[in-house]
Amino acid sequence: MDSTVHPITVGSDPQYRKLNRWTNILPYDHTRVKLKVVDGDEKCSDDYINANFLVGYRTSKDYIATQGPLTATIPDFWRMVWEQESSVLVMLSAFQEVDPVSLNIFISHMTGYTLIYQHITPKTYSDYRYVKHFFFKSWTDHKADISPSDLINFVNTVRDEAESHPPGPIVVHCSAGVGRTGTFIAVDYFCRYIKELSKKSKLSKITDVMGSLRGSWVKRKSVLWEDSPIDVYGRIIALRDCRRYMVQTKSQYAFIYDTVMELIRRGARGDDLSESGCDTESCLSEPLPAAGTSGTSDAVYDDVDVLKQ
Picture (cartoon, rainbow, N blue to C red):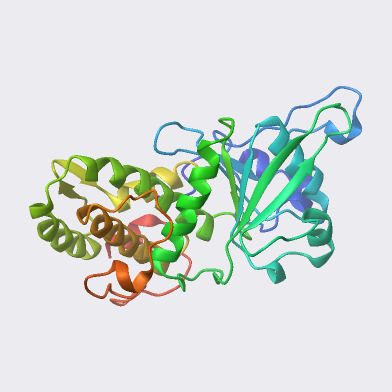
């Protein structure tokens, strides 16, 4: 499936060029987030933002994937957070990837290494909300230079927070809002999906599942665990049906397989897949293949059929 299969008419409009970080990463029309237009308010006179709703484990709008805010789009970013009633935000890009000027406005201060408490009050409203803004360090753009366990633990922490707050979508962004953002969303999906499978699985089946999953990396096919499919390739197709370039490189795609294998190991041992304190060394019974091996490269790919080559 070519990732340009859906129209990007609105985002391609020249009037929105300054609102897009990259000229080739534009929101699909059918899933784009539309801001509310307020008559008579110049700052709320347009509905455009470079963001899409993403399908999740339960609903078609579990997440919002968006680019890292530009100086010109910061007010629109917070309008979106407010209007969609999002209480959890996830930042996957390094600070140096964001315009330093916009960064000072976008994030008031950091507390610790993973979490920012932010207080937002639209000028047109008398009430306010607190949101939690999670930050994942040291993940290079286009790469998968992190450990599966570290991301699983981070995802579980974010998910725990999201489930304790109102049902607004989780807002996820990196620089472009596609590569690391897509990888995070895919891993969150499989954390929830495999947690459900592990509740009804038999430990004796784990060896067969792991062997089949390793083979599926080459064949790009789903495998069965207790008659339930584990389909990484299909999940990427579903994400790319919502936003272009989701899971942007082959190494990120391979990393999702590594993460799924780690999740299956945890489930087979009876670990609580919602826990976030599992150390990499103690969690693995044998080494996982490094993400991006087997001839993969970090070239950005637009057409997901390249994964079958």
